[in-house]
Image 1 (cartoon, rainbow, N blue to C red):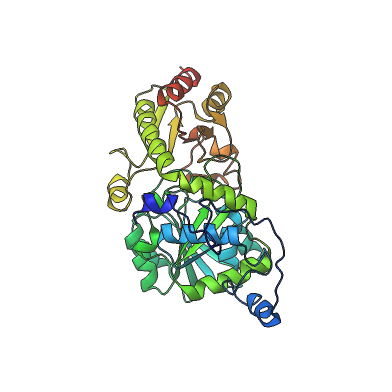
Image 2: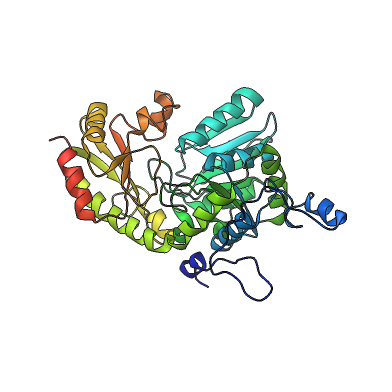
Length: 388
């Protein structure tokens, strides 16, 4: 089945003579056994039955199977948040003294997690520009363990040459991790390009309705899956059944929503680029985006996220966020409603001035998540709020 069809048809646990069309919510924390040996086996591995929801749950497993199929992985682990997924794979992989390579424009929570690992455990981090895969070989040390990338970077929409960077990471013997939140598995499947682990904040596009918090890790290799599952389970970062159920419902409509997100972003990017209050616009689908050619190589569309820089800097950014009426000023993204935020003062406030500059975030940078509303209504709202 093609990805849009896979998103809709979710495997459900079988019943004796029939099966429900939608996945039931198994809102159970504990499961009883008749056989003590079966209970013991279920405690030792993720696929030996359901014993305790922190270990595994039928509703959560349905979502994990759905996402693994969509991403082309062997298995998935769903978590209580996107940050839970990021911390799960990093803590399961890294030890004191290890070295990480990461692109320099990242989700603020990832940046904060890497800083914390550096300060508390001596994990060293080198940030790459993400323009040339030769950066990987140049930065590798004997202690380098992991390469961390984003398909479409948060917030500046940078698109690295994913196949080339993953090949460079593999050549250096690194575990390669790709955050695919902005692209979703409908626009890009990093495992097909060589990634070992794919990260999602299911809170964003997968859930899609601003009513669920969740995360996911999808694995290309069964042994890595089992190792990380063990750590995530011990951390207590696993997903809640009801949150998983909401995410399953969200993923089933993801194909329709992503088409509209991408279409609306295209219109808004072009109109913002013509507005006198806007200095520049970055959306990977525009020919003037620095990574447009790279994006065309491995993205099937260019996503619902765009950033633009206002002529008036920080004050202009604040004025815009105060002036919108339809669009919501909100830190998260990927929902059916259009949201925007001023990263330098909010989502990426953990970064100092040098780090912000390196990541391409300016004083007047605004990140916009295009919703699925009528694009004319969204544009009229932005137009009335933009400073003259």
